Image (tube, rainbow, N blue to C red; front, side, top):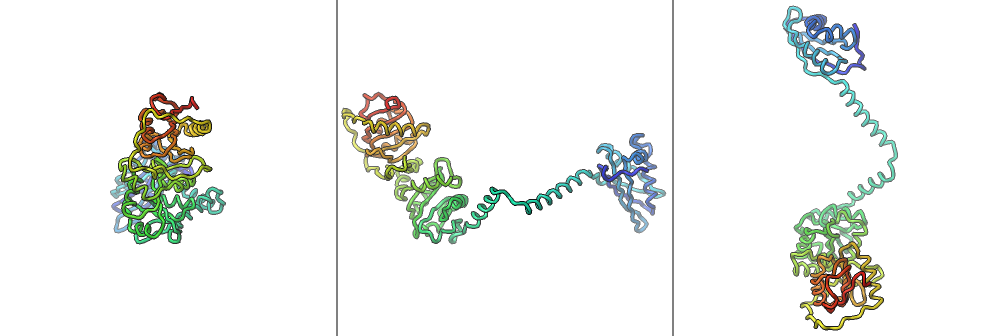
Length: 420
């Protein structure tokens, strides 16, 4: 008889056998060949399949107890899955072995390749683990691993509310209050070790106590949720300064430069509270966030600090216009070029220094709240509503991309790209 090589076997048929009597192993094998003979046709005859090596040696393991024999049958096969299934089903027709009744049932057809594949995967894992333990990782992997571990290790729990905070929260005189743990981690990554998280919209007692002892800056996300947290903080705690991330961004995703820029442009807590109380339905923090135009220009307080109690009285419409100097033209032209594509507006004082910066959508509202601005440069069209607001605030120059208002209709000097 041929013997199938374990290397070429694709499937192994496993079957259980129960015999009501005592029989030997040759009796079982003889019954398998004898009772399946001629059942499946010449192509699937077990004797011929075994001679050609497509069916391997049939192994029978039996055990006799109390006059009954039980055991297992194992049949290796290199046939395809359909033919192997047919052969497995055929041996279940055996009902007698020798003089005894028997019951044979196939409980599994094992795919040898699956077992080999699992063995390959497990061995590959072992080899990869060994290689990673013995091989030096690249520089980026080292940097990422060290940075991640240090960031997690340095975050501490502060106060009775166990709030996530930086390691310098106790010894630092100034503290940055942020919204969540991810914000603390990002600030820690960029060197700010004095941050602490609120962990929710309600202000914990730990934060209130901290505000009474240290100089606190609230640093929130650039969305409506950030405004709500500022309102909550300023109502229950003594917040010294307030700042926000840029529009649509969260503190946890800011780069180092953006963090420094936001902290430099912080405003007082009283001013933020005033803005929120004056205009509760507006994203008021957009108006209080100012940006210096150039580093060598003098710093000025945000124009919101100069809001008068009442709007100035509108001057006579026949007031003589102020003439624009060549120096002013040059400054206006440079600022306008820098604003192209930003949809922003810069408000200047009489020394042509930037007092504040707002989106065009907020420009009209911002102009109604100031009295000592000299000029406004913005990336947009000069419209009648903006001109009216500029007249009420006694602004001398409006500089835009183009104008929908004729110069003769207003006492404000209207300048466009073509005139500069």
